[in-house]
Image 1 (tube, rainbow, N blue to C red):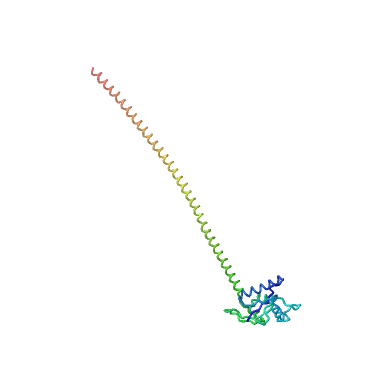
Image 2 (spheres, rainbow, N blue to C red; image 1 turned 30 degrees about the horizontal axis):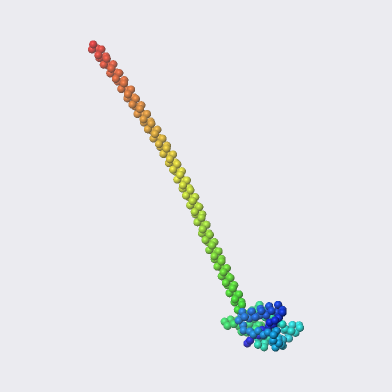
Length: 234
């Protein structure tokens, strides 16, 4: 089966050109074999297209406009019907083609009697892109979580450093206070020792004076006794 797409290569209508490009690009994305037939340069193609488009599918003026799509001799539809089939995931049904190999969806007839959708290559590509975006988003979230954990781990470290500095300051203050107290205590002890030495010296001086004073009295007494004895003898 050969898909025929009737196109107008030299059409002056921008809308027609866009529709033709849309159909061709989508068929190529699905890797569907098709034959483009130009009606602008080939009169036979134009006549054949006009004769084989069903009367009920022709516009009011009776002249169908490209793009028109056929499967061999069977008419598939124009751009509007193609677009609707694409939106409903029924392009293979629209073209009268079997689904791609490996598809689990049964073949649907060209008239669209079945409501089951055929999986398309474009949808697979979109799903693949969506999965990649989800993976990228998850990777970014993991990176953000890791950064958050790193920051959270660093914060306690800074607090610990501050606490260590405060503890060091407190220890230093305590040490300095103890040193000052010890110095004051040593000064008090020295003063006490000096006072004790002075007291002892004073006591020794007093004792010495008492001894000297007692010796003088003894001499005077002995002299008096000796004078008395001498006077009595004469």
